[in-house]
Length: 396
Ligand code: PMP
Image (cartoon, rainbow, N blue to C red):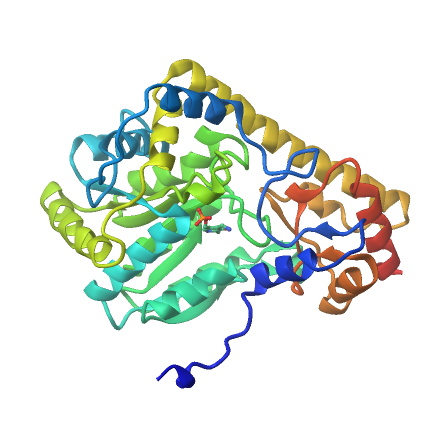
């Protein structure tokens, strides 16, 4: 039987990291994977998380199973964070929230449920999108297509094209939307453009699935979460996957959530019962530690303030690195890449061609994706000049 297994290609992003790891040039830079690195080039351990770890260790508890949908206090904390403590949909019992294995786990459980409810639906993702979106929804059994989003000539979003594609979608189509800090481009819709998108989703009876993996990396926790509130106000039902991988620097804990905003408390109850089956038959129930850490931080006024300021620190530092890269490029005669400082989140769509990206890799040991995506959150004061030199070299 096993001889039937064909060798699959390496994951495009994780494959880059493997290539980076086996590169022995000391000046190499990994701009491939979406991880925030601090000035020393390491994944940071946030102070709020360290304190929460210490508190949990000092009051060590047995590690029993969580419920299928996760830790109740965690779910409450997440709901407050993304919907707002006073949200009427929460009070009405219309929102179902389950703890998930990172943002990816939330997307997958949501995809499995949607597939069960509407097996013939098409899923539309942005062109381009996080590469795992297509793979994940395809694997869940859907046909995956895309709507137009990034337009190279505009160095931004072609909103008219996006709206036109959504308008021509069949009723019931699932539309995957990045709530903030679009991966890979770094270009987000404005609040007015979101209103236009919501109007089309409603008009065409489409099912929105929001993916919010970077809450707090755009403008702030509240500001970035405003998109979710817009959807709530619209009265539409929708799916929302969130992640604490980046915002808490808890990548390996696999901690995120899936919420489904339904039309009624009764519908919510039925949806939850189905979600529990999806979870139970996949991994039974989620792990405890990540949920305990996030709940400890969000539930303590002081730790929460520390978190918000540490998150602001990561956000501001990325913005500073963007400015530094742009001014470094300008100093090397590349004056047309200032869009990098307008983009949001960890990524920058650099506009470099795949040949240029390959040259960056081969000649300089700088690893980004062939599509030109670079993780600017992996720059630091020591490598930013080297990266600017290398980009200037491949551009000239
Ligand atoms: N969605 C997007 C757009 C992402 O960029 C990522 C992480 N790269 C995820 C979801 C998944 O995040 P997690 O690591 O929490 O599964």
